[in-house]
Image (cartoon, rainbow, N blue to C red; front, top):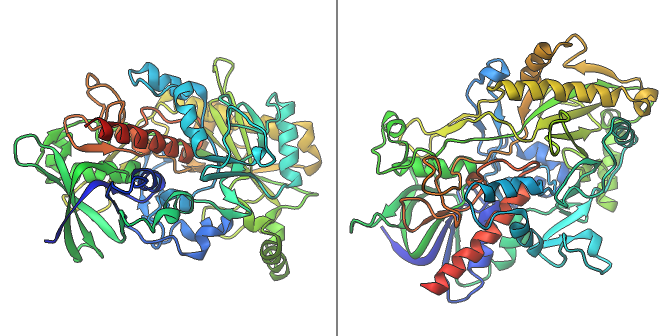
Length: 547
């Protein structure tokens, strides 16, 4: 085996890995290796916003994971998209810029994670931000300008969505034009990670501009299949083993003098750890892996946002269903994007958002809406041939906990993903209330002229028990998996990393991605992952200077 040495090895060129590669290689004396299982983000549909339709479920860009048959979903197994390309899931996601709520981070800090309160993490959001509201000058303590992470307004509006926003106001949810000031209560069009109508992923923001650096090496189509640990009794991780081009490809071993960083995501990072013998010993033995380090929290604590899709047939208004139903309409959509970078091809999967409380007892919004001027039976299928819109609502702080677990020693085998959706009475109750709130909004005066008719799940579901069952029938992932390598003190038996993201009981190893979140943020999770990486990079460089 050919051996090379670096100061840092980063596993995964996803959202976190792209930023880490940028920051860690800024010092020309620091040698950084970035190992990515997928390829470069050269696929055209990555960059056209509506192209997520062609990226999710595509082996070129998606890991093609599936969940187990989930009892809470009526025994259904559902697709679980994860990006397998430069930029990771930022290359296939909904491009929604969302930080979450002040309380999310204050809870992290209160749970013995110093340095992670809202006031402490805010500077790391701002540091790499390029916010459209500051393009003309001025300042805002809550937003930044000139950073790599571009945030813009949505480039298209719809009459049906404007009416939903008005209806939400009539239901007690006020208009909002900024969901990122610590309390996201309100309704308005989402801000998006785009630049002039083109997807702005983590690769374009952080990785591509620094690929020329001689001290940064990037290896693609390389899947890590082992961690190299010292044999001097310390157990320190000092490198990785990986294969290029699949299970039968060339085997490589690379060592580092500093740290190995797992940034493979909430599915990939625990999978790598478990294959390396780090995790719950009994589970590892079941999978045919010899335990090396007992860390029962690896792969546990999986949290995700389950979206409940309600579809309404409407009249007297244009939706994408009609606009895209003819060759003439499709040609017009394509021409508008070609000439102006606007129109439906510039749309994120969801355009209008709303944050609301499921009950008066909630101190902050625990529901998020993604509202779309379109409808279809399931993702990847054709749009309906009648005018309709979809109001998807998800519980932001679910109490259900799932797991990611390997089933064999084979690092190329997909792990078992069991989100355990709707497994608690609390989650089922909130789901029922969420569907009831949607009906209340759609029943408001502002929507009346469109004569909305609920076709999914349908008006037959009335009682709380019936609505909870309906939630399981219409629910699907909005793919925000987090928590599978949770941050916490060593006194917490389920914690995997400490507040500086160093792996407990495994020196030389850090984990920097959404897996370290102790609890899920109250909103979309991509930009919080960037914040985690920004803060981690600073901590790592500080530690390096102090060695």
